[in-house]
Structure formats: structure tokens, C-alpha cells
Amino acid sequence: MTIGVVIGESKPTEVIAQSSRPLSVGEYVIIGSQDGKILGLVEKSAISSDALTNVRNFDEAVESKEVAEINSRDKNYKVKIGILGFLDKLQKGHVVIPAIPPLPGTSILEATQHDLGMIFGPVGNEWIKIGLLLRNSNIEAKININKIVSRHLAILAMTGMGKSNLVSLIAKHVATLNGTLIIFDYHNDYENLDVAKINYMMAKINPRLLPADKLAEVIELRENADKQQRVLRESLTDSVKQAKDFWSSLKENVTTFGQTTKGYADSASRVLDKIDDAQHRFSDILDPDCGDPVDLIKEGRVNVLNIAELSERQANAGLSYYLQELLQHRKESVWEKKGKSTHRKNYKFLAPISVIVEEAHVFIPKGEHTDTKYWASKVAREGRKFGIGLCVVSQRPRNIDPNVLSQMGSLAIMKIVQDDDQQQIASAAESLSKDLLSQLSSLNIGDAILIGQWVNLPSIVHIDEVKSRKSGSDLNAVSEWNQTDKFKDIAKETTQGLIQKDLLLD
Image (cartoon, rainbow, N blue to C red; front, side):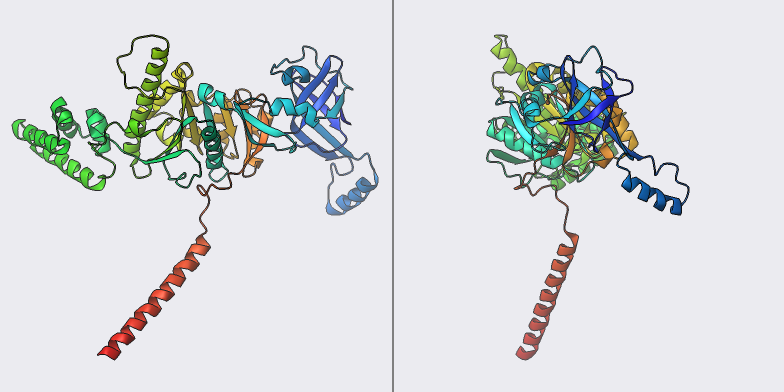
């Protein structure tokens, strides 16, 4: 069915059309050119009225409204359509942009389920359903899981717009495919994730495995406390790392260093205090007898690593260690398959893995060095060769290191209203047009623009809700307040009853 006509100046990448009805941004249409059907995406939509243009006062507006209502030609529906390529080529997975722009006067047609189904719902184990096209809701939207691992992914949105729901949905699909996924859960959002093959772990840090500067972060020595840093560096010897009682051996070396090195007694005493404090406060986290924490990760499972109990510095030390070790395990696995010698024979992860870093702006910050950022950047650069994928999740794209963000081959972008966040996204996503970028502030909860290599074409999608997922939802403050009042009343009644009973007994 014809719904519009190409007007004005056409380009190979975009056309302007006059339509018979309002068209929604994100709606797909067919441009019937002489060289074959062309698929287009509505990127901008405007409605105007001749009668209601240049109205100067209210009375004139009322009169013009009446004129507009009886004049069937008054409304003007104009759209900008981005050209995605020839339809038949897109259905075969190839993007071919027409060399000659569609002629003015070319008809604009509705895109049918047959037109779009093969493009957005390909068949194959690597393609998983993620939701429905927002403006063509009878069309399934699928994404390519392989591209998440090989080309990396960024999930960007304001708080409460559906980031954790999308992560949960990906996790459920990975579980059904027997894949290995590691989620670094900084805010305990995935504690109740309902996945059959899940391995939920509390964060552990083995201090024996850390270099001195990382152990200093974990026990929270100040970065500029040079003397304390030296005390720890000189005391953390190989014999301490191999000692049966790690902490006692470390304290003994610190004490000895303070006593035998002039001017370091007070610094050694402060380091001892920090060690004692860390042992007391972080006894569940710092475990010199836990072995290699990477060994707790299970292949073929969704592994949720709860780092909520760690301070920011501790979490950074932990994440950098994991990323470094995971990359090394995958390298050695690939080298072994290629017949190359490897110095480590107990490596894990024989199949590709994917790592999700929540709160990426904290651990991979712009303009600031962190060890996690260094190793995340290394994974982003080398992961394709060694089968380790990186997914960064954040509500503050402007604060993520742009070099890492630019290496994310696929993006899911939900509602973003801040201009600097949008500009950061625009610089990282070349395929995102300015007009689509302007739509980010108008997206609703669960809506996302999907671009990059995990989809055949840019699309605006409503993400499926993970019904069994309890994580990430807003607190019901009113309900909890009412519940608190009930408990207070019960406690008050109980207390009064006990007092009266005591009086009777007396």
C-alpha cells in the first residue's frame, strides 16, 4: 500500500517524503525504485498545518482550527527516511546502498512482515530473540550472540531504563546455549537472577596473589603515603606469599622492617594497623587460603560475582586481576589448540567466554588511570583473537574511557537525556545518525536503539521483560514504611503486655 511519495532533493543515503499519514520515527518503509525495492528507516517525522501556521492570537487560532478541520488537504506529513540498502540484498545479509538516489515521485510503501522477517529474525543458533521492533511490533528482533563475544558490547542508559533487564535476558539465553558468562555485580542487582545454570559467588581476593601495590589498595593504604607503601613493598616477600600463615608472616616482616630501618617505625606501625583493620573488616573477602579465585568460575554457567561488599579500590584490584587472568587463560587455550607451547598446563575456559562489567564508568573512567581500565582495554583490543568478549554497562557514558567505548562493536542505547552523554555515544557509534540520536531522550522503559555488528540493521526495539527477574527494580518505599509502622505497633503492644505481666507477678 502506498503511504507516501519522495519529494524534493534525494540522496543515495536519505530522502524526504510526503506521507499520507503520520509515520513514527523507527518505522521501516519500502522505497519502490526502478532498480529494486529499497528499505528505509524513518529518522525524522514532522506534521504541519497551513491554516494554523503564523497564528497571532487565540481567536485566530480557534478560527484557523475550524478551517483546518474541514480542509482535508490542510495537514502536511513530512518525513526524513534513511536509506538502509536494497531489500533483497539485506535479506541475504548484504548491505548495498543504491548508487543513484530514488527519483522524486517514487512511491513509499508499507514494509510487510515478509519484507522484514528475514532481516530482523534470521534463523540460526547464534540468533536469539531480544524483543520486538518498536514500530513494527509484529516483527521479532534478534541479536547475534557470537558478535557479543567477538566484537564486544556496550549497554548504555539512564538508571531505571532497563539495563539490568537486558543483561538478565542475555544471561538467560547464554545459559540455554551452555555458554560461559561472568557478571561483575557491583550493586547486588543479580542476586535473584533466575537462571538454571547459575553460579553465584561472593567476591574473594587472595592477598598472596597480589603485587604489593595492589595489596596496598586492598588494605586501603593511601596512594601518597610513600613510606607506608615502601614498608609493605619491602615486607611482601616471596617467603611471605608462600608462608603457611600469610598474615602473621607479613606482620612479622613489617615489624622487623620498622625496627631495622631508620625513620620507618611509625610508618610500619600504621601499616600494621591497616593490616589488622583489613583482617577484621574484610575477613570474608581477603582469604589467603582460597586458592586462585578464578578457579571458582565454572565453565558453561552464568557466573555472578558479587563485589558489592568491596570498596571501590578493592573492587578495582579484584576486577583487574580477574580480567588479566581470564585473558591469559583464553590465550593459552587458543595457543594449545594451535599446537603452540604453553607454560601453563592447568588453564581453564576451553571455549569462549564473555565478561560483563557493571558501573563501567567507575572502573574504566575517562581521564584517569585504573588497572581495570588497562586490562579492559587490552581485552577490547585482543579479545576477538582469543575468544573473550567484553560488555560494559553504564548510566554515565560521558565518564567512560572513550578508547574502550569506541571498541565496542555493538551498542544497546536506551533513554539518555544529557547532551554530553549523547555526544559521547555519537562519537563511539558512527552508524547512529543525528536524528536517531535526538530520539534517545524520548525512549520509554525497555526501549532501545540497537546498532552495530550484533544486528543486521539499526533498529529501535522494545526489549522483552525477564518476568522472573527481581533485581534492579525500584523500592516500594510506601509499602516498607507501612510495614515498619506495623512492626512498631506490634512491638509496642508486646512491650506493654510484658510490663503488665511483670506488674501482676510482682
